[in-house]
Each structure stands twice: as C-alpha cells, then as structure tokens.
Image (cartoon, rainbow, N blue to C red; front, top):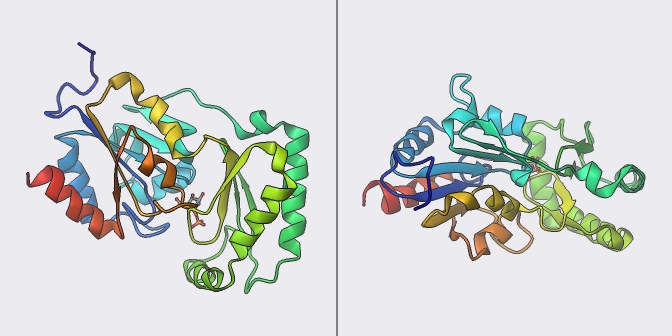
Amino acid sequence: MVSSSFADRPHHKLVLFDVDGTLTPARQAASPEMIEVLRALRKKVAIGFVGGSDFAKISEQLSVNNSNIVDDFDYAFAENGLTAYKMGKPLQSQSFLKYVGEEKYKRLVNFILHYIADMDVPVKRGTFVEFRNGMINVSPIGRNATIAERNEFEVYDKQHGLRAAFVKVLQNEFIDYGLTYSIGGQISFDVFPHGWDKTYALRHVADERFEEIHFFGDKTYKGGNDYEIYFDSRTIGHAVSSPADTIRILKELFLEA
Ligand code: M1P
C-alpha cells in the first residue's frame, strides 16, 4: 500500500490544468464560478495547475483575495513544472541558465534581440526577452504590451506567421543547443531544453501513484504547449475550447457523477 498525502479524498486521482485558456481567459483572472468548481473538485480528487508562465503571473490569475495559490492547489507547477510546489512546499528544480551555460546563453539572447530589432511589427513595447528559471520567453512586441495590444498582435500573427518564422530561424541557427520552442500564448514563445515541456511536471507526482492523472488544456495541437502532456501515456487528456468548456467537462466527469 502506497502512503498517500491525499487520504482525505474519496478518489486517488489527480486532475491537472493548464492556466491560460483553460482555467482563465489568456492572462486574466479566473472567474468566481471556476474558483467554486475547483474547490468542489478538490474535495473529491487532488488538483494542480501546470502553467507555462512564471509563478508571479499565474498567482495574479488564480489567487482569490490575495490567497497563496500553493495552498489553493495540491500541486502548483509554473514554468512547466520547473518551479514546483506540493501541498505548499517547494520541490527541487533545475535552471535553464545552468543547462545552457552563460556563453551559449548570451549568444542566443544576442541573436534574438538583433532579430527582433529588425522585425516589422505593429507596436514595440518592453521586455522582449524574459529570463525565467526554467526557460526564456521571447516576445516580438514585448511583454509590457497592454491587453488590447496583445489581442491585436495575436490576430496579426495569425495572418503573418511571424512567431512561427522566428522559431524556424532559431531552430536552424541553434541546432546544437537541444532546445524546444513552444508557442503557448498570444504574443510570445517559450524556449527550453528538450523534455522540459509540461510533461516535466509529471516527475513530481509519480511517487503518489495516482490511479488516474487527468490533464485539461486548450493548446493540445502539435506545436501548442499542452501537446506533449495531453498525449503522454501517463495522462488522460481533455482538450477544451475555453474555461466554460473546462467547467462543463468537470461537472460531467467528477461533480455530477
Ligand atoms: O500560459 C501560456 C503562455 O502565456 C504567456 O504567453 P503570452 O504572453 O504570449 O500570452 C507566457 O507566459 C508564456 O510563457 C506561456 O507559455
């Protein structure tokens, strides 16, 4: 018999969620209804989020009245699980910078900044490369863009494929770096070592030997940042079209059953 931190839950199952587009609208807060559904779900199974964003941004989106999100979820995984908490306690992590090394990292960032300087995009704001623990995030318009600017760029990029073209250039230029490029949001893409996609988070839950691990995500197509974990044999994947769709499936599968 495996000892479990979740003996108080009637089902030894784990339900993991992507954040943007799955629990919340992109870069916005979770609705009161979503919070209520998650609370009800947590009485039955263990729950966690696996976001591509960093911890601070996910906190802004999921915190309720300044609550600490590591207490609201059994597992809290930011940066695909490179920043990880279980029952409020931090788990061991790795670093992008250590993996790549300072010299190679500098070459990569210099190349990216030169490329962005030459890009013709509707607006340019600030923070074109965001340095995170387990990845870097690259945005042609900059992370300081407003919500309206983000929405406009997303549409523009759908027409012009700027991010996809940028990623191709980087794949060729840094072929020996062992990096994955993932377009998970509206204005940017993430860059991290092969294997440090959202399946990275699964290593943190293996010791619990859950009967089932469900994963809900909206970017489950090839190239989307939910693709690998959605298709992973360790998870039961649910592709959703919006937070409302997530709520609908949760009710069907866990709350009304
Ligand atoms: O969670 C999905 C993505 O959210 C943000 O993307 P964007 O700013 O482009 O909408 C980023 O935090 C990104 O890292 C993350 O994968």
